Length: 286
Image (cartoon, rainbow, N blue to C red; front, top):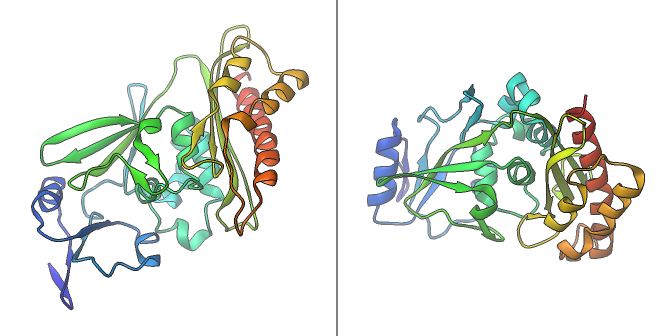
């Protein structure tokens, strides 16, 4: 433990100690890993920071059809991983366009997820690929589906005494792939809109399952469930993809802000959906 003025900076070396601190600390405490989100905001009420970089939560592994990603895995680690590129292409795509190289070297997947901003690039891939979040506390672990984790802008179901241990993605037995698309003002900016799509194919190359997640166009990242139903059991063609795009506006509620207008976000989201679905399908159908 080291003191920063009247503040404490705590660096536990085990998950057990970390969740114990979260449960018992009497003041306001913030979890930190890469720090790219924490350090850009003011925290006048903060009493302590809990550094979780020594807990061994930076792993990527594939076990019995399950992809496991530790919450402290950096985006640089994601980009370097052939396991991610092959099995979780949407997250690999998103990592390559998230901020710039200096940020990707230190920013963690868990930190980006916990920030819960609707434009977060890692969030649509998690929803589209059906990820599960393993949350740890002194009482033990619980698992939450990605689409149940976010309840509003910068709001999640994570309790004050919990941290994200890892992310789990069950890999289908049939052929599958995923893709991510993003539009921003420049290559390192937050998304004006982003989209992730997951597609699995039946033996006849029709779509067996599909999930589409839309970011930066609603208070939280949302699934385009009505649009997904249009694609089930079919092979994408231009007419079907146009119907898919036409079904997107009723799913979203974009706003106008300094980065973009709601009209542009509505229009471009349909284009991104078409691109992401087609890319994911073509890869899965090979």
